[in-house]
Image 1 (cartoon, rainbow, N blue to C red):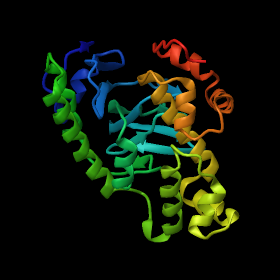
Image 2 (image 1 turned 30 degrees about the vertical axis):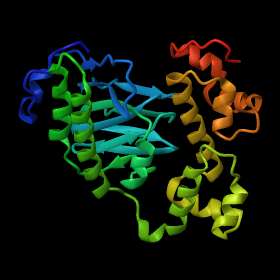
Image 3 (image 1 turned 90 degrees about the vertical axis):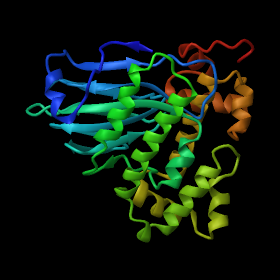
Length: 296
C-alpha cells in the first residue's frame, strides 16, 4: 500500500482536524496477483474547496461515498441529486457521472473505490440496482473500519475478508434505505432480472418480451419509469461495463470477450465499444496497462 497521509485515529468528532490538508487524504492499495472476488483499490477522505468538481465518463470500479457534512451534487443518468450529511451514493463501473461541491457549503466525505466480479449479483440480492443515492444512512463507523486497514503493511486474505465483511454491513444498511418501490415495479424488476441474465448471452430485447408476455412498448415504458433509461441502453451499457473489466483484468482476446458477451462478431463489438468509450477494445486495454499480444 502507498500512504499519502496517515490516518491515525479517525473519529467523527475529529474530522475537523484534517481541514488543514489541501484536499484529500488518500491511500492506494497495491494488490498481490492473486485473484479475489472483491478488492478495494483506494480510499480516503476529501475536503474539497468550493470549486471541487469530478467528472468521469469511464469509471473502471465501483465508487462508494459517504457525506460527512456540507452539501454537494451528483449528476448521473440525466438526473441531479442534492447531497447532504448522512447521504451515500453508489456508482457502477462504466457509468458516466459527475459530482461537485456546493459553492457556499462544500461537502466533506469518506470514499472507497473497489472492484468486484460478483458485486452486480450482490446488488441484485440487496436491492441496490440503479439506486444511486441513499438518504439519511449513517455508515461512518463501517467506512472508518475500512479506512483503518491502511495501517496494515501486508494486504493478505484475512484483510480482504475483513474489508468484505465491512462492505457487506454497509450494503445491508443501504438495502434498508433503497429508494426503490418494489410493490409498484414488479414488471420492471422482472425486466431488470432478465436483462442482467442476458449480459453474457445473445438474447434479444424481443426475446425477453416474449418470455415476460409483454409488448416491446410496454417493456420500455415500465423500465424507463423506474430506471430512467431504455432496456436496450441498459443492456448495452452493462455489456460494455463488463467488457471493460474483462479487458483490463484478463488476457482474453477481443474475440473471446465479444463472444462471451453475446455480440454478433468482434467487429460489431468493437464499433459499439468505441461508440461508448471513444476507444477500440485494444486501445482501451493498452490504456489500462494490460498489453496482450494477439488482440485485434
